[in-house]
Length: 74
Length: 222
Length: 259
Image (tube, chains in turn blue, cyan, brown):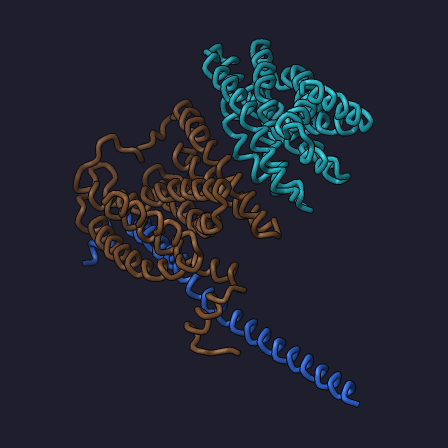
């Protein structure tokens, strides 16, 4: 087993190459997963903000309309 | 259409001569850079003769690249470039005219001064002739490929460094074959293959680079 | 029969070009690519590390080629994909092609980097130096510059559509130049061979070494498919964020509803 690990006398070279490959390729697939989580969170906040703004502006318009109707009826 | 081509060349040349620094600065840069190497490495004749071709060519590369701003910058800034895009004449022709002028004000002076630098680097007479031929074939390629890069970055505020990163890798084949031709010339070896490559590459770039540059300009200016 | 197949293919093509369908279909494909890639990569690694025989000249250090060579192949392949999708985006104005090109760039750069470093690590026991200006390594280095230039251009241009088009042009110019650069570097290298003859390109490779190589090569390709689709899905969500289908997807995936 230890002999397999040694790889002749080239153990350090071979294992560092494969190890580097694992690290680089692992990072390349993990990063989109992490990005997606933040992206979903950001989009959620954005939609929430937008729907609040929509509700507020509707309320604003409604209250303006009510005021106009009151003024007209006077 | 040829009249438009010529008149654009005349116009750009006139503008360039109004700012003589546009012509002289790249040239001085070229000379200074070559001078740095004996100072930084060694004034020994053998060493300089061996690295001379490569150094002169790298210096020509850098000088040509640093002067690319003069291609589109001022026309971009004052809106002339936009007018060219909207004109009825093919953009590729106008781009080619500007590239020709760029070569006339950068590549051509480099070719004229190269024998001086070749002597300073102890190149043989044959090698100096080869140097001039490679510069004659190669500097247009530098202007042509450089134009593509400049077209891509002209709209960016600080595109200078980015331009280098984009364009220098594409210059490498020219460098390899040119400096090798000069080196082979010193050693008395054959150079025809290298020169054929350079000629072919130049024609290749001459036909395709204006089109790519036009496409790049359209992207930058919209 | 043929008509039906053609109609089906056209339908698939148009569906794939639609970001909404792409998101859904890619989501289904990624696990398949991913798991197959994992199986092939593990099999290839085990074969390459433990089963393939020891090389007569280089001992066990040659086993690095099972990473180095496929990584180099991928670096080239991905650049071709970038140039092709860039061309498709320019000609047919398909936004998704831009997304694929842009998602591929970091992956391609990563493979190029991997090829360079593993090549360098292999070089130390082979030639005694951490770097040699051999044809393949030098070409890979130049390719890395091309990738970095592409990514730098993309980040320098603010408007995403203009950035995509500029990068497409750059990729096409690059892909045309790559064979020229390769040829030049090969030629340059053969002149300056000297004592360090490159043994990286074995003229005839033994079957027992070829199999792990191919396993890794195919595994890398499937891995790339999974990785690029994964990145592309994120980009699609980002660029189409104002569309209603994205809102639905976000609600679905986070389990929260909005008014």
